[in-house]
Length: 396
Image 1: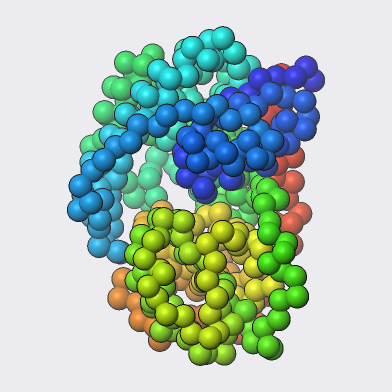
Image 2: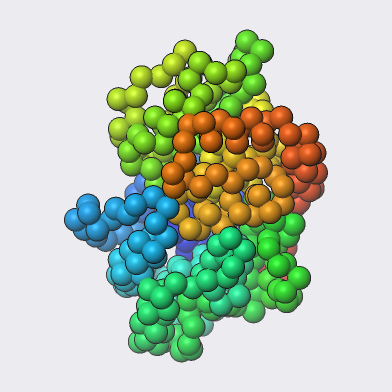
């Protein structure tokens, strides 16, 4: 196949950028040029992975802190914040990206575009440059709904109110059509295993579930000569969105001086955890990835991000999911639905309830058996290679 230039558009968040990297690396290995617009932080990490980052200046939208806060577990507050702040901010970001990159991509026209859901610059550039596009999802696929909560498909009113605004914006940018929030391309690739997608048989051939695409970031030095004194190793992985020490304090109360050796990986945005006094069976890291610890872990507590959840299952580690937001609740519900761990609501959670959930996930042989089977399924996936095969075929 003649080498192509492929442009990537995704959110500047770890769970999105990192999930794309293995696909980008595989496309580059096959001889294609891959350009990946990114802010300063992620441009460094993309370049380190051998991919051509195009550094962009994302607008800094400063809002009063009280507008960004919501009560944990209060879904109505979350959706209102997303519909009234997050969605309009996506329009501002999209305008900035398009204006900043328009000259570059007119001079360096791509042969195809890969874009993440809600990355509206992707379809805009596809229309502007008259090139084909594939939508790539790092979360579940949905049929005209925003989320699946406790098994029910929902789109809260703030999102329904915002949908026509997005349609009008996209129309002004040259992309016609209604329901742009739920737009699907002729080919849509999802970087999750088919076995983890809910209602998977309801999706037609436009939707391809290729499995996990983990890149090789790893700190092998941390794994050398690690001993746990015979204690089971509990990994606690804090969400990157955590900004205070409440979750860590609860975990310390639940597992301090317990039967577990605990490795707590702090969220990158959490600056308050340094004030927490750790028991002797705890260790804290910030610059360590989940995959440094998971090969040694017996059980994991996480906040149910899709990437972290699939990493745990890939390594055969049962999951205790404590979701802070509705999108994570969707993943936690699926974990429970498939019997791969335990879903614990963060609202009203107590240390005793969390410890009980970890004991169950750690010792229940039925859960561990299902996790082993999912591990084998995930490891048989050809995620990055299969995604690249589909991309090459569509862009040829």
